[in-house]
Amino acid sequence: GDSDYLAGQTWVITAGPTREPMDPVRFISNHSSGKMGFAIARAAQQAGAKVYLICGPVQLATPAGVERIDVETAIDMQTQALQLALKTDVFVACAAVADYRVAQVAEQKIKKSSQQLQLLLEKNPDIVASVAALDNAPFTVGFAAETENVETYAQQKLQRKNLQMICANNVSTPGHGFNSDTNALSLYWRGGNLKLPLTSKQELARQLVQHIASVLKECPQP
Ligand code: PMT
Image (cartoon, rainbow, N blue to C red; front, side, top):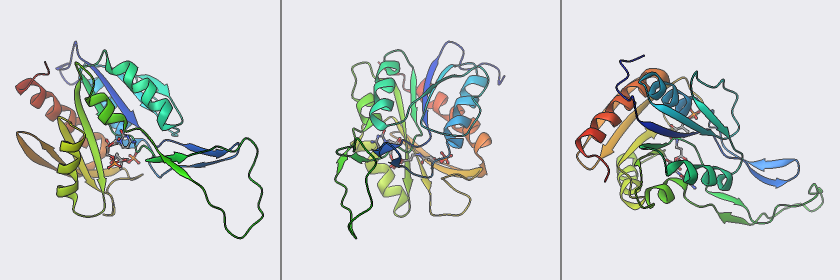
């Protein structure tokens, strides 16, 4: 691998969408393919880390040497994340977690009848914020998928969720973000910022993992 500079470290990555059921045959979700998170998992494993990859429903092969945990809903993802967070050095939240779930999942298929149908949604827990709030929290890295005011919104998420770093992508630009094979990121942490220009998600992940490792080295977690 990449000289094994992460040997001895454990990393946990979340990837892909979550799926929030409406009834036995329907769900609410989003366009995350899992490619970005899987690329980060592969890059961290190749740099020598022990890697756990918690992923929602995606159509991707597990990177060699990575331990994969499949989940469906945001609540399931949080349960797995909080368990693994206790034994990890770095937690990277690349998943596109559904912000809301259907408040009452119908036990039977919802029948088509009236012209309009109202679904009541309930807020999901914020997984990355709950990890960052743990005693002895790992070095916690979030993503920010934005369509406008990218820098301002990303900086607000960094502060509000109490993260060590945030990786912002402008998901309204073609070739960036959801489901493409390429992406670009703007990284913000307390000590500075760095732009990683458009390239393949795998190359971007390699640069991101190196950068996280160097910031972690400068300001190790208590
Ligand atoms: O999967 P791909 O197709 O490769 O696409 C990659 C990506 C665009 C999904 C990825 O690069 C990305 O931006 N992931 C974060 C998507 C997102 O949900 O962003 P957000 O700005 O809504 O959330 C901010 C952060 O909070 C994220 O780290 C997210 O994982 C986390 N979060 C959000 C909501 C929630 N309930 N719990 C969370 O942990």
